[in-house]
Amino acid sequence: MSLSTVFLKLEYLFTHIIPILVLAITLANVLSELGIIDKIAWIIRPLVRFANLSPESGLAVITYVASGNAGSAMLAGFYENGVIGEKETIIASFVSSFFSFLNHVFVYFIPVVIPLLGLQAGILYISARMFISLCVTATAAIAGHFILSNPNSVGSNTGSNESSGRTKRIKNVEKTKKTGERVEKKVKKGVKRAVKVLRKILPRLVLVYTITAVLIAYNAFKPLESFRVLSLPGQASAIVAAGIADTTSGFAAAGSLLASHVITPAQAVAALLLTSIISMSVVFVRHSLPGRIAYFGVRLGLKIALISSILNVVYTALVLVLLLH
Image 1 (cartoon, rainbow, N blue to C red):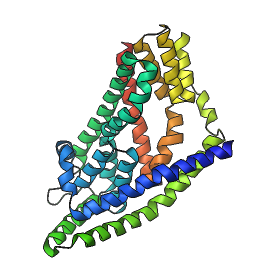
Image 2 (tube, helix red, strand yellow; image 1 turned 135 degrees about the vertical axis):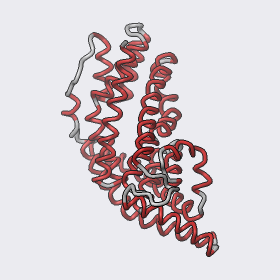
Image 3 (cartoon, rainbow, N blue to C red; image 1 turned 30 degrees about the vertical axis):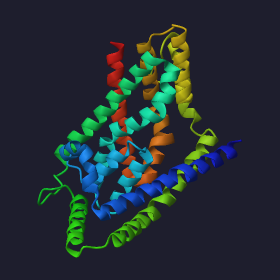
Image 4 (cartoon, one colour; image 1 turned 30 degrees about the horizontal axis):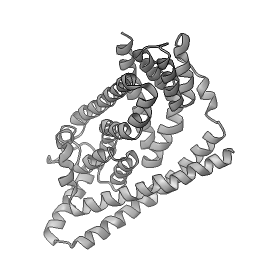
C-alpha cells in the first residue's frame, strides 16, 4: 500500500509537475532572448519598480497567478543563469505571495473551501488568507525597495551576482538590437539556456520529491503531528486535530460544526488559522523545505523556506488575534 502511494506521487510528478517546469523554464528563456519580458511585465510594473525587481523577476511573479510551479521554475531558471542574484530571488519569491494566493483562490478555495465551510465562513477564511498574502507581498516589496538597487540605475552595488546578472541582460538586449539576430536563432539560444538550467534542476527535483514521497508513505512525519502549542476548548479542538492530520479534513470538521451551529464562522476560521500555525513544523518539513530545495538548491532553498515560515506564522498570528478580539 505504501509503495503504491509512492508510485502514485511519482506519477504525478512526471505527468503534472515536470512538464509544467520544463515548459516554464523554456518559455522564460525564449522570452528573455526575444526581449518580450519588458513588454509583459507592465502588468505589475508599479510593484516591480517599487521593489526594484528586474523585468525577469516581474515575469516570474505574474506567472504565479497561472501556476505556482511555473512561477518557481521561471525564478529558479533566471537565478541559475545568473540573470538575477540571490537577494532578488528571495525577495521576488515573496513578492509573488499574493499572486500565488490568487491561483489558489480558483483551484482550491472556491471549489473546495467555500462548499465545505459555507458562504459566510468561506469568504471570511479567504479574506483572512488574502490579508496574510498581501502582508507578505508588501513586506517583500518594501524590503526590495531598500535592499535592492534600481535595475535601471548606473553603478548599482547590491552584490556581484545582481550586478553581473543585470549587466548580462543589458548587454544581451544591446547585442540583439545591434546585430539584428533572427528570431529562430534567439529561440534556439533560449532553448539551449533552458536545457542548461533543467540539467541542474530536474535531478534535484526528482531526488527530493522521491525521498519526501517515501517518508510520507511510511509515516515518517507522524510524530510531528502530536505536537501542540495551544489547545482549543470544546468541539473547536476537533478542527485542530483533523486539520493537523489533513488540511481538507480540517475544513470538513469546521463545516460540520458550523452546520450544527456549535461554533460561529469567526470561531471556525480562528480554529483553522490556529491549526495552520500549530502544523507549521509539519508543513515546513513535508512541503515547504523539499519544494524550495528542489527548485533553488539546499542553501538558497533553506533560506526561502525559513523566511516563508516566519512570515506566515507572524501574519497568521496577527489575523488570529484580530479575529479573537
